[in-house]
Length: 562
Ligand code: 1PR
Image 1: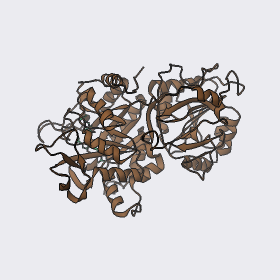
Image 2: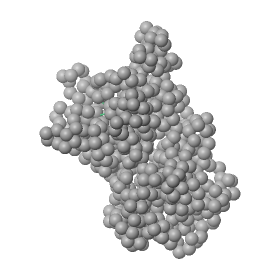
Image 3: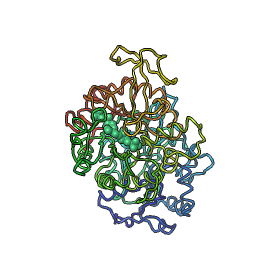
Image 4: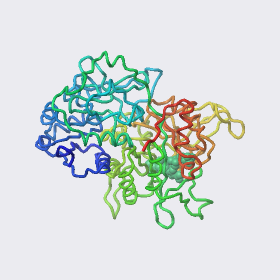
């Protein structure tokens, strides 16, 4: 038990409470009560509410659980509470995300959407590691910033509460996303709320959770805490400290001996020399992922690269990989491969893509990456507009788990064009700035593929991205088959064209061979994040080396501190 009694979690089943319970278990707390009735809230000594998904979904689930009044009474009585992300937002009066749905109204103010067009344009959601600025050093124990001002926390949200004269007294910390400042952290007596995810914020986040677990409640609301005013907030120097994210990607499949291994292709060919050679084996998935966590990976992606062949959930080892990895790795985990509706067979009942994703979330992942099925969804979207016969997997998963949980993994194939008008079927043409074709071609179009680059569709990457953003995807992982495993840098022309098509964050992928390539992705194509596989697996460059170079080039980035 925690000092002071019983630790209780309010979970409404919409997300990955497993990340939180894993973090708490890592800190030594496994005796946790899950709220099933209002009585459980009355009896809690410390209550954590890890909200995910949408504002209205959170409120409606709380309503159907019948716990709204108990929750309000608990917070109003100044009992120890920690709300995370949507669990922090619902403390406010209302949100742009669901104008018809009142929040709990415990903190004055409204939650509003980030403006993707202001400040010269920015990606929304705000996603990644940002710093939290505190108004002044608190006189009583606080949860945040005890490791110093360099602490960074993982944020992923499209909406945020803004400071006003009415709610300034609740402000524990502020953050900036480009031109917009927002409340990152609420602190009022024994009530805390974090817009970020401490359970996914590496050692800094774990330390915050440990502080909450060890926290001794203060008897009075204002005990030792100087009341913050809007003037205090206005005086703060709140800097944009969102770091460029560096991701490690593990392509996972069975080798010929039947073991699940990390492999790596060369333009998606994972056998060393033709079909008769063995699948390249670059290590064990969990072990390698742990190494990457400890060397500063901001996120880790597992791709089940042969899942398209059968139901991924028959790949129980992949679920086991996630279960094990998520016990030790406290940064966001993405899993891709086989997120699609699976038809019933003689041996097995069918499953929807939502059910497949749900199994992965319950095993400990935070986001799913959809490849082939997103291409099919985009083609349906283009044929039928926003009213296809059945909702797509993107819409269903985003609706249940939030847009931040849906990544689109694009497997693009480049076709050089001698002239812009040589493109087939009116596809989007990219005027090349960074490369030329073998015959000096200065244009290209980028075609979407499915099944890991084995089949091609009459769809260009820009069409795919625009459709997926409209359907509710939260992020793009942009691979290029031609650059994959080549170590010669990312396809900057493709990335730039993608950046001009959508406002959701873009992860550059395929081709990194040196730290400068990551810098190029940020400088020349405004990517939000950059991913690599081969150079990290082969230990040619470490994640820390990349981050040092990125920092040297003038970009913010999180440096891992154990
Ligand atoms: O179509 O929803 O089942 O998803 C399948 C997923 O598996 C997709 O995300 C697809 O990209 C991936 N995939 C399928 N086949 C392969 C393969 O390599 N044969 N891997 C594959 C794709 C690409 C990147 C790679 C980067 C960086 N791997 O993930 O890690 O290109 O590599 P590098 O830094 O070494 O250049 P679905």
